[in-house]
Amino acid sequence: MRNKKLFLILCVFFCLLLSSLTYGAQTGTPLLVDDADLLTDSQEADLSAELELISDRHGVDVVVVTVYSLEGKSSRDYADDYFDYNGYGRGDDRSGILLLHSPEYRDWWISTRGDCILYFTDAGLDYIGSSITDKLAAADYYGAYETFAELCDEFMSEYEADGRPVDADTLPREAPGLTYVLISLAVGLVVAFIIVSVMCSKHKSVRVRREADDYVRNGSMNLTVSSDSFLYRNVSRTPKPKNNGSSRGGSSSHRSSSGASHGGRGGKY
Image (tube, rainbow, N blue to C red):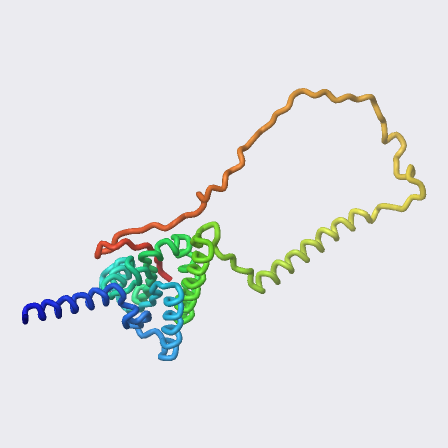
């Protein structure tokens, strides 16, 4: 009887442990870990609330982790291992996306797992990375993490709307800045002024005539008999390219030290 009770206790403990590993973020694993201490307390609270809201909306873990040092690992390996061994990910395939930032050598890496490998293509991750790099370089860390979270929300909403991830042919287009518009307008006005001035200068010698034939110089027109002969025709045909979706880059993946499949992109700032 005692052995049976001990066996039941061990089974319950094992199930709880497995559940904790599989659904870590849903049972208390923080979605924001600021070990590098780059954010203020109020920024941490605001960003944590935003990450939880986005994660619950899409059923995946959206995570931001800062560490000062990568401890000799590559940014990719560190991010993948942090995701795998800290219980992140939701569902059977532990879907989630994690942004790792290490200021020691100015590294960042975005790691994806499960459904997020499909949600975020290589081109999409590159776009997110380029969107946060300038903010990281300017030490606007909160702005960079918030941009990451917002783009994650936007990209996943896009996928859920039409079943296609944001890819090379559907990346968001940024509107030109006010400075760019003003410079373009000024250049256009200068070029137009120069062209009009040149055209006006060429007409200064023209005098108004009363009759149309006054504009024709004597002996300047000499019509002769002429004919056209058709020799040959050269036709060049180019097949119209088919839109078969080949322009979409898709997602690449690799295996982490735990054996799990991950997607991801990274760089420096």
